[in-house]
Image (cartoon, rainbow, N blue to C red):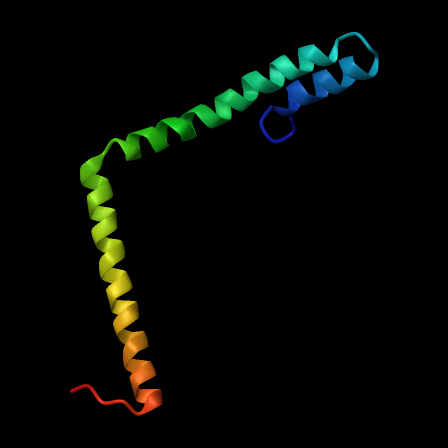
Length: 87
């Protein structure tokens, strides 16, 4: 609860739970509500990215280019170490 709720909320529930004036279920309801406030924007961003084919294609192309560069350098280094010349 400390991670997703405000200080006032956590203090309130600690106090009320300690003096047995609320039930554990009340705390769980508040926690679920606060978790949703934190996670729903993240979930929405994931769905937006997933549905954006143009953006995903761009990212895949960038990743492929970067990987080709690293692979070419690695192969060059390995050939050099092994004494193999490119024909």
